[in-house]
Image 1 (cartoon, rainbow, N blue to C red):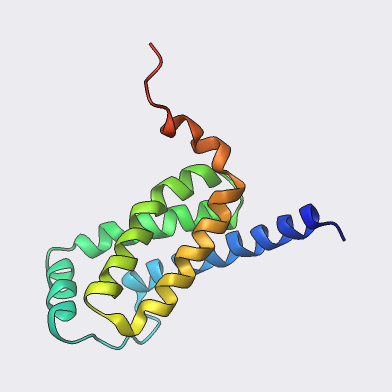
Image 2: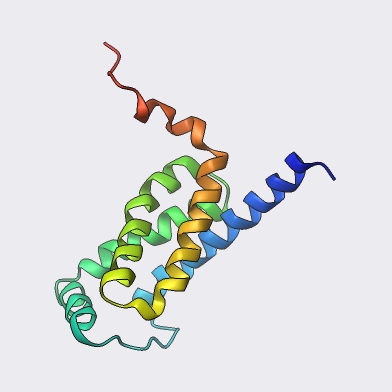
Length: 133
């Protein structure tokens, strides 16, 4: 099997895993089907503020919808763009407030980067020095 074909399969698996992770954990905010261990300290205060203001529901929408885009292989570039700030905030949250979950956060970031790398040409216009008139 050629390297290009192998990478295509690896990226497809990464896309499906990433989509599934965001759909499952995003839907868990609404349906509470996965028991979650509550963090302590400042992480608990932060999550408490997100929950009490219902901001957590907004974040979950930006997890579920892009996750579905990735699962159904439709609007993948849009899904990646919407998930980028979510992935960043997950990483920062776990690095600064809840290091026990950092491994899963890093895995999610690596999956995102794999899928992004496959579609990087769609983002190339963002890296131009000047906007076209």
